[in-house]
Image (cartoon, rainbow, N blue to C red):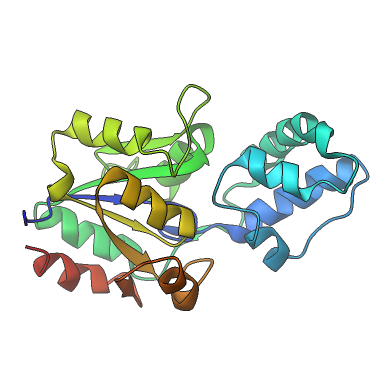
Length: 221
């Protein structure tokens, strides 16, 4: 098996703890229309697949067809508040810097809308997210994870084979995304779901902290 050369990351629950800002923005949007709101844990069960999925499933029964207005309002709220509390997980900046210095190519491939993913990473991974050779978030013209399209596109653009690529994430959709893309996968126990959930979803490798990735890739030959 080929040595890993490209490491692609999910964003929410993998690179950064984003839940509070996602939840606050969703709750502000729901309250704007007079709908019931959620706890952070309740919102965590809705994130990962897409903003549309989150908003559709946040609406009370009988109001499901009003999701488009809620999505639009969420984007307004989140654009203004996406970095109120969001931060990289402890050790993540240092781990990425070390990987880059060791010659690995880094990318972010996420279901978070591209309009939010890029400015968040540019702000939280200075200067201007230069650690990442490619950031690809969700856009209307591309299918979302677990469809392999975005990963295949990024991998092809950067010039790496499937055998040379590792995907890192914290959700069941990430496990399936890596499988659909023909990639090796490493799960993040620090993310929104935890180790037991990832293993139940089929993850064979689950890391306990970002620094574990430095040793992991050395042995992925």
